[in-house]
Amino acid sequence: MRNKITVVGAGNVGASCAAWLAERELGDVVLVDIPQTGTMPMGKSLDLLQTGPIYRFNTHLTGATDYGPTENSDVVVITAGFPRKPGMSREDLVGKNQEIITDVMAKVTSASPNAIVIVVTNPLDTMVYLAHRLSGWPRSRVFGQAGQLDSARMAAFIAMELNVSVDNIQASVMGGHGDEMVPLVRYTTVAGVPIGDLLPADRVQAIVDRTRKGGGEIVNLLGTSAYYAPGAAAARMVEAILKDQKLILPCSVVLEGEYGLKDIAFGVPVKLGRGGMEQIIEVKLDENEKAVLQKSVDLIRGSMSALKM
Ligand SMILES: NC(=O)c1ccc[n+]([C@@H]2O[C@H](COP(=O)([O-])OP(=O)(O)OC[C@H]3O[C@@H](n4cnc5c(N)ncnc54)[C@H](O)[C@@H]3O)[C@@H](O)[C@H]2O)c1
Image (cartoon, rainbow, N blue to C red; front, side, top):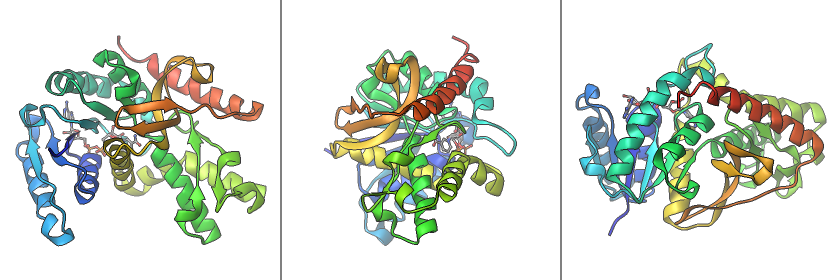
């Protein structure tokens, strides 16, 4: 039996994610959108399916505007929702995207009651919290993608600065998926060497600042939010889950006392495997890191207060 992966939202991030999933042959892919999009999801999935003979993958892709074809999915990636435009923060999206996540979660939980759900919609941590609450499922099956993307951005900037392979870089970002995210310099290494030993403090700080504003940099260049790397980051999480890789990645999960936090979804390192989010890793933080993380907590709590529950 092949795995079934549903991607909800056939827009920029959803279609990009479907392309990465297909190419890696992780399972058959269903791309769903709202009926107002007409046959767009069918068109995109047929177009992607026709990439198979070129890149030699055997993934079957289907487009849909109802959840029938998604039934009993193993993993559901939710990319449905409004992206930000220049001048907007992710938090500006709460109201509109709450309505969308509420609609989507009702349909997903009914069609695929045993699925693992990866939320991508912004403001990410607030939407993860909402989706988890609406599902009534354990937090191990409803969590969100952000840290994988933020760490990848940091790694890309380090690779550009040092002219080394991205393969050598282990970058670590914690906290919310907002401009208050926390790139962890002490835990970021190049071939095992901390970046603080390789770069002067002002260059490290410039990389930290660029990482935190990495999403906004792309919004300003593109006029909408990023999608290739976000789609790839979500697909990488699906791969870790379906291949039971026990891969440690930063993800947004609902905390129940870890890091001294509860009743919030927050970006922390977790272990991903066939059970979904199988373990939360608690790394030691110094006082400065804790203080910066608190700003990230405050930003998320502010955005959560705009939820209508
Ligand atoms: N977590 C991250 O790292 C990250 C990164 C980039 C973008 N995002 C977020 O992902 C979301 C999608 O971004 P995008 O660029 O793909 O936007 P997009 O506008 O290109 O696509 C969104 C799609 O969602 C669909 N949609 C709307 N309501 C729906 C519903 N009720 N059910 C099913 N589909 C529905 C729309 O029709 C549209 O096709 C945004 O909220 C964006 O902010 C998150």
